[in-house]
Image 1 (tube, rainbow, N blue to C red):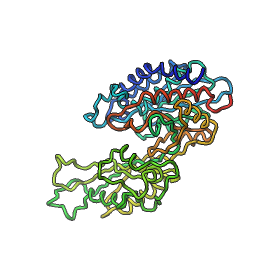
Image 2: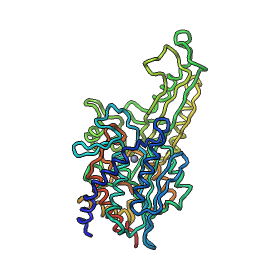
Image 3: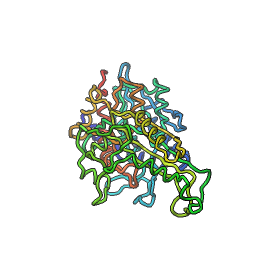
Image 4: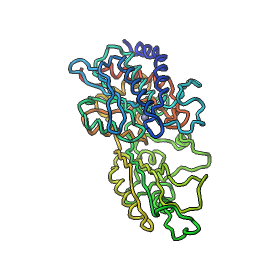
Length: 450
Ligand SMILES: [Zn+2]
């Protein structure tokens, strides 16, 4: 079958891809039981398992992972001696956030101006559908073994699948891994993601009093935990906006393709007249340097607040770590600063500390060459590479567990998808071309000798 014929088969499967995606988007699979009942995740996992079982995966099952989530695993063995490809995706999603900001219902796949809208339409349910479409187009003609793993808590940074991979190395062992959870630099431009930043998430509590006290009767000498928190966090950025954790060098320069400031401003939605933070270029700041963000603070909300000094406050911090730096070194330096600089000896405690190292994908082996060929055939343009500022911790677990496997990242999540934001969408032709690239890659033997 020629590339064109295979492409036509993929194209004819678009209606089914849309039906599958509508089914998956309909499950509210936010893996946070504090916000959403577990039922949404369970139903999504069962739906994914049924869909892969229908594509010749005799052995499909749900794996319980240590963080309480479930991953879907399937295996379709290849001919004797054939290489095995592991296809990764995740079925859990971010919450819709501000539901009022959605122009279409977040849990109903809706077409608008040629794009399909819904939470998870791109990240990562669109990638699940691209994998299914590739397998459907190929039918029984597979020269390789295929394993699928569809994670159930990727968006929560709770590390369930990473721990599972390390504890059960044989189940997921493969010669190459396609992590389908990234996307093209722009729609139509085939792109492999080569670098991911690592991440550190933590919650810190600052406490000083046994209970809140009146700010008139006691305010002044009372050690205010909110003031202490502000004093601890303020030195972590300089006036330019660079992240400045004492003891951590942060002057990296990005060596790969540039990210022009104008495009970055547009993609990020920076308001006119507002400047960019940091002393490097957008590419330096995004891919070669640390980025510390205070993602939440627990203290009284403005409405309902009383004139009082609080007993304790809490903040959640997230630090992104560039390739070449070490998350453990960063964490030690940050912790030392926060503990040693606490004003008035207020108590500083840490909880929910999650760490993942930065990642660099394979770019030299035969599977990477086969992927580059398949992407070029599917999109009609040579494949390019980018880095991503986000983190996919399971990549590090897979690399450490299978040091010989070639791990590569592609997918349907181009910048217009607005993943993690209201009005997430996917371009159906990105699903189609990504599915064709996957099918061509598998059909060519995934770069292995078979
Ligand atoms: Zn994702």
